[in-house]
Length: 456
Image 1 (tube, rainbow, N blue to C red):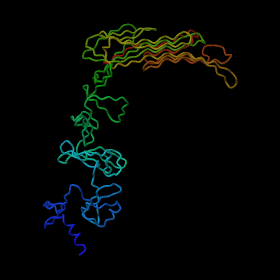
Image 2: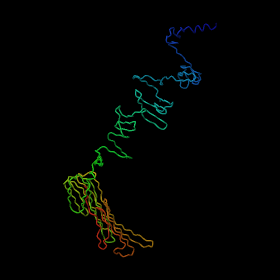
Image 3: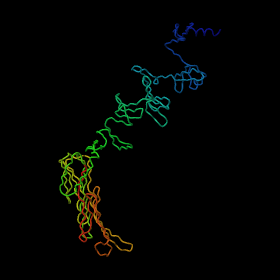
Image 4: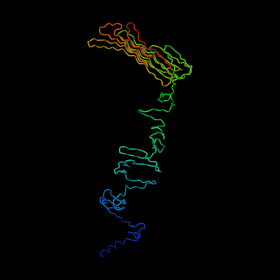
């Protein structure tokens, strides 16, 4: 009986009915099994350390405790299996997700990093997993895009069988990667591995292992790619093979007029300047070789019955010239060799009004070589002097004459034919003559004449 009064006093503020219990209130809410009402006090749940919490045997689902060490706060067991508890912290303060000012938005005041699959995130949002880490999908769930990682590899990809598009400012696609692997720039439906719509520029080198197809500029079978002065390329027609069945050679000095035959509308022209003569000096002054004449080739659009004019002159400073309809190409002759051992200089090409085709090819003549002298000594101490006259300059498609060589043993008399080589003969239009001595009145080796070849 000694405990009757305290128990009675304890039960005074509590009201019990058949359905619920009220503490601090005589009218507990009908929806609550237990209602505690106070304006000055709260509820104090069991307080314990982390070790004590994890030591609870078979905790019931919904069991609530307050942890006093480690990450301090309320912990709730969410597992329905007592033997396998799942304790989770109830966030508070800066760790709490709060509704945002815009509809259906939330935010977190935590200024640290968020980790998914890792408790040590290094960035504001870090996902650590193998395979798909982040994905966004369409409202119907059919289209997905995001990130995929493996150890050593990272991908930005579509997770569904759909194309990937890239754009800026919420605009239309500017880059498109098709499921076939074709990539389009300014083209949303690329049909090749790289399909660019518009102009592109490469500042480095381009290495192409296969064929090149250039569709712009009116391509057609038998055309060639040519460039203008600014580097713009275009396809230009070549005369058909059947239009070059004939050849007109003009290699005589003076002026020659050639009439364009009926049915001929385009011709191909080759022009050579004359080669310079090699020198012919008194022994031992074996002189230099003559320079080669210049060369040019080009196409000309012509009118049947019209006239082209060819001028061929000889000697240093002169030239071979082809002219038609107010335009001309002039290939200068190579210079004759200088007295002594000086070789002649090769000729150059100049053009007129540029009305001929832009795919013109030209080459300056090669300079003639100078003479050389060499003294050699045999194993018995006998010295021999070698005199080599300079070679003539090479012209395009032609080789200059060889200079003659004298070998004079010490003490030998200078006589005709003594150990003497012979000057070569120039080969091809415009080649320079080789040098030789004037022993016995030998004339200099002449360079070959200039010429014009017209293919039609």
